[in-house]
Length: 288
Length: 277
Image (tube, rainbow over all chains, first blue to last red; front, side, top):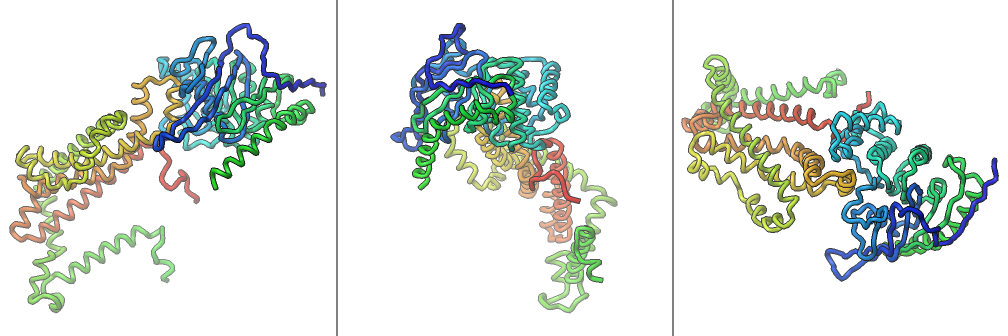
């Protein structure tokens, strides 16, 4: 096994980028108002500055309920930030982020469409002739291992198959930015590692910018170029950034056993642990 | 012996048939004059007068369908009224429900009036419709439409409101325009709700047609029943009721077939598509 040097630096300054980053959140805050009680406000994220370079794989980890999904929705343009700016390849974001593909945490396939029709949906929405859209969609279904299941409806597929179909649905549009919100959290560990490797292989081939949200630190380190740790909510913000210098291509199962991985894991966990405990305490109090 | 013939999935149909035969047998024994001593009534004609006699009812149905063959016109009229009422009511309900669900302001404005119209016992509109639309098909269709419309309307409204936000957000991220959202997300979602209410709404369209005929018309099965009732011909009334029941069952079966064909994407109620052997 080659000896790998892993640098775990908590530096927050990146080298100045040559091209504008794929996605840049600057000082973003999101405050929600309770509709029933306008006096009650909840600030999910506050003062978040986060960049994802073109072709970079960035993971965001944090305790549950820390506003990770909020950040992703802001990046997708589904949610306008209360304060702060969002830039996509140097352009300020207005409305939906047309250059991004979003893979949701929850089931997002249209249940009235077959797997093939679901994957072809985005292409059809964008005006591609149906025959061509079907051809490309079935090509992508084969790539995610669902070639034989194109005519299945979502309820006829297993959870893992639905996630694969979602992946194909997002990637068939060839987005420049891929946003993923705990995409594999509902899967069993074997399926999950298979999917993680597939995503890495696909990313390796095309080098898109990826913003990957997860609560699983192992997953974050194994897949990313950079891991950002978010503090516990409310008003969570990044409290640490770690560059992951593990060599690629990686196998997510094998890389976990290497020494640099473990060193990095320990370093990040040291930052994350306090926040997880804090978040847990808050949940206990809110529940009690 | 009993273990062989007791009701079980294998001979369920047989038992269901036996039950029907038993009901008709009991009806026959209790009503045919002179068969049993009078227990309730003063003379042995009265039971037959109040409840009819199954053999005479069967004879009436036989004459309607075979020897005289004069019921087909009436059945046709009732069927046309039912289908028209259902089609118009469903399309109007679908359109209205979609529109109101997507226009929060209009829905807030109209909410109390829609509630009021839904709470109103709409059968009572039948005489008004008879005045407005005459004694022909139109007044029955109008009555059926008012019954069907609200069922479909509320289901579609609910269906649109309950499109999972994630599916909506996903479709938007995939590039769907507002029109495409309507066509590819709201409409399919709402249609499934229309179909889930299909059995109820077809049944109500049928009720609207028959009640309309009963209250004033010159044709239809409801009219036949009304005529027979006027001359205390209880056997014909019973025959009409039996024909309507069979007709409604057939209609329901047809709806079930259409539903199964159009909603293949929905999981079967009960969770599993497969059954253990």
